[in-house]
Length: 151
Image 1 (spheres, rainbow, N blue to C red):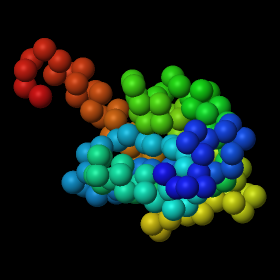
Image 2 (image 1 turned 180 degrees about the vertical axis):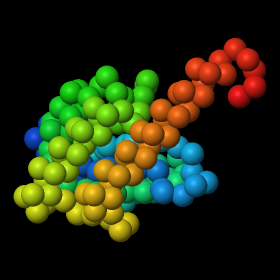
Image 3 (image 1 turned 90 degrees about the horizontal axis):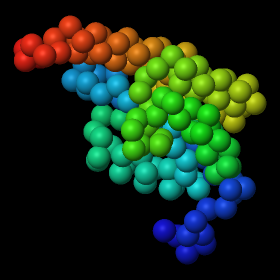
């Protein structure tokens, strides 16, 4: 916490939304997607570092300006794809990928998206689609082997 930062951000407080995806590495088996908010770039880097310690193999892909209220509305609209008990973490579902793509495209056209770690809009969407296929494959395997004790 910084001295000039309020303990609880106001809904209208300007900050940054950020997108984190599992790294494109065959050793990384995660499929979750994180969309978060931070008061500033320094705070976002600290949160990204903490998330990488909790969930290794995550890359921060993009950041764009948004108020706290805007970010909360995003999560409220997409709550059906959120992981249980993790408001900012999502299963890779087509609806959340489309919602994130819409967010990024809107801000990218305005020139307010900062791409990180070599990502672009095209690469980030392709990575989310890979996660969707991987998650579908895991779900398929789980349904095929459920109850057999062989998975």
